Length: 148
Length: 72
Image (cartoon, rainbow over all chains, first blue to last red; front, side, top):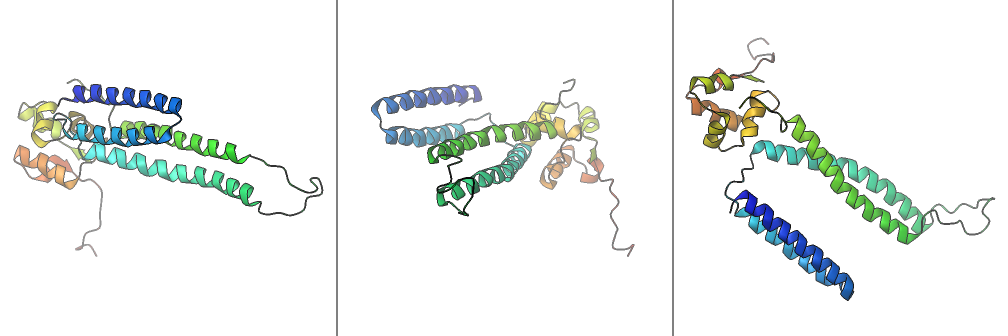
C-alpha cells in the first residue's frame, strides 16, 4: 500500500468513526462507539504496517520520543495541580471553620464541572503533543530546505 | 558535529534522495545531518561512512576537547 492510499484509508476510518459516534449518541449506547474506536485504531495500525513507502528512521523516533516526554512532563504537572483541587473539593479537606462562611463552605467547582475540566485537559494534551512535535521537528531540521 | 557528507555526495555524484534510499532513511534526515541540525547515531554514522567506503572520522568531525587517558 502506498502512503497516499493509507491517508485515504485513515480518512475513511475517521469518517466512519464520526458516523458511529453520532449513531451511538442517537441510540444512547456508549459501548457502540467504544468498541468501534478500538477496532478503528487496530485497523489504522494494521494499515500502517502495510505501507511500503513509509520510512520511519531514527530522527523520526527521536522527535516522537522527545515530544512525548515533554508532553508528559508538562501535562502531569497541570493535571495533578487540578486533580489536587478536585480531590480537596470532593473530600472537603481541610475543613477549618471560616467566620465568613458559617456552616458549609460553598463549592468552588461542582463535581460535574471537574469532570469536564479533566476531559478538557486530556484534549489539551493532544494539542500540547502536536505543539511539542512541531517544535522538535523544527529543531531537528524537518522544515529545512536546500537547493535539491 | 561537523561532517563532510555534502562533499562526499558531490564526489560520488549522489543526491540526498539516493543516499537516503541507500541507507534506509528519509531525505530530510540526510539534509538535517548535513546542516548540522541533527547528530546521527553511531549506527547511522557508520552506515554513511561505509557507504562512501571511508572511515567514520573522514566523514564526521568530532571537535570537542575531551581529556584523554594519556593526558592524566
